[in-house]
Length: 223
Image (tube, rainbow, N blue to C red; front, top):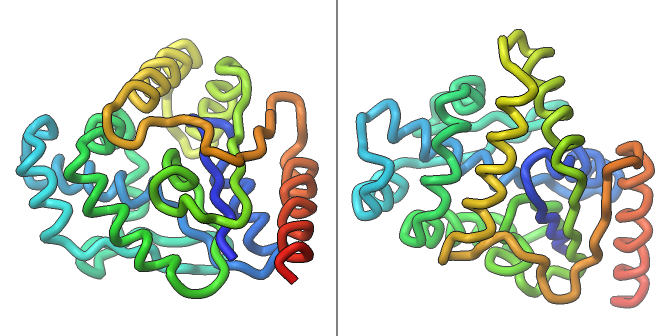
């Protein structure tokens, strides 16, 4: 079974997906981390992020993996752990540009599809239900008010020691939403058959409960 969870930045996708995967006994695939790895590579190697061909070649040339560990996963590039580096502000600022390139997405989507081909998975991103796993048994679109999403991201960054302003984070959220929804390749949209879940005023555990019930119904229907 595949559970596809899509939605904009800060909607709670990663947190919900991780907890849901533990709840239903599935593996978790953080697809956004793979695009962050490509953005990090571009910065490290001095590749122009607007050069589509060069970026696709970069993505193809390196082994990008997600390694499960207790409480989450680590991101590796050519078997080197780059998890913390991919969470840096310069990577965050660049990732939407990188992810908008169709040639890059085709490389990464093919790898993601190979990963989820076997077993049970909970995958989160922005095109899981539309491009990566259009036949997923359960499709979810998580959303929340922009101000709430910005505050969540702000709190996360501050907890990690970052010196950031809430207003700047809100602007970044708005910019990323625009890029994600307007890109020509796999834009952020609600997939056919997806259940829309608004997390604005709901605790994470309640959201996980709701999706777990949908998974249970899907499993029962399949049986």
